[in-house]
Length: 366
Image 1 (tube, rainbow, N blue to C red):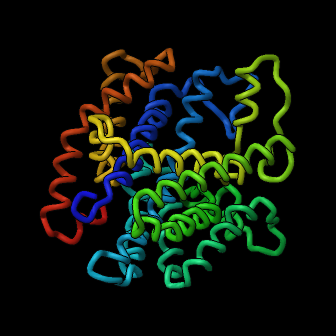
Image 2: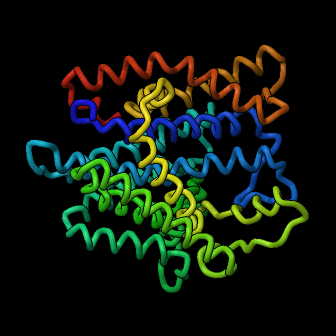
C-alpha cells in the first residue's frame, strides 16, 4: 500500500491503460485493416486478431477496478463515508467529457455524429452504483452476477426502443439535428461495476487471503468459460467452428462479442484479470512501477493520449502529403504505442504527483 493507495490496483489499471493505447493507435494509424465485432477469423490476420483481443481486457478490468476503488473510497481507514456524491459527480463529469472533449478528440473536426462509447458507459455505471451501493454487499454481488450472466437472454419485448439501445443494443438514439450513436450499451457494465464493488472488502483482508480468493475466482471464470464455449451454447451469440490449424482454432474459440459484452467475453477478461490482479501483488519491478504511474492518473492520461494521437496523425499526414497517415504492419502499431507512452510518462507522473499532494478537490476526479 502506498499511503492510502493500493499499488496493485494502480499497476493493473496502468496495464489496462497501456493496452488501450495500443488499440487506439490501431484505430488511428491502422484503419485500412478494420476489425469487426466479432472479429472475422477468416479475414483477420492472427497478429491483428490477437492485438485486438489484448485490448478486450481493457474495458472489463477498468470498470471492475472502478467498482473496487469506489468501495475503497467509501471505506477509508478512518471509517465509512458516503460515496453517493462522489460517484454521482464523477459519473456526470464522464458523461459531459464523452459528448464534448472525447468526441472532439476522435473526430478532430466539427461533430456530425456523437458516439457514446466507453467513457459514457463508465459514467452511467457510476451513476447506477451511486444509487445502488448502499444495498447489502451480498445483494450487490448477486445483482451483478445476475446482470452479467443473464443479460444475453434478454429480448426487447415492450421496452422502449431508446431504453433498449442504451441498455443492450448498439444503435442510434437520434438522427437529427445531430446523430447520436450508442456504441457501448451499458447494462452489462453496470453488472461489472457492481461485482467490483462487492469485491472491495477483499482489500480490507490479509493479502494472502485476497490473492487466493482472486485466483480462485479467476480460475472458476475460466473453467466455466471452457464448459460453455465447448458446448457452443449459452453465453456467446457467435458459435465457434473447427478450423484448419491450431492458430485459427484458437482464434475461433476466443472470438467473443464485445458490444454488448457477452457472458463468455466477460468470463475470459475478468477471469484472466482477477488472476493477474492477484499475481501483481507479488511483483515489484521497474515495469510495475511505470504501470502504476499511468494507473494513478487514468482519466488525465486518457484525455492526454487521445489529443496526442490526434496531433500525431495530423502531423504525419501533413509530412507525408496524404489525407491520412497509416502504417503497414501490426508491429508498428505496438511500436508507436510504446513511444507514445514513453513521451506521455513524465506529464502523467507529474500530474499524478500533483493529484496526491495538492489537496485540491477537483483533481481526485482525474
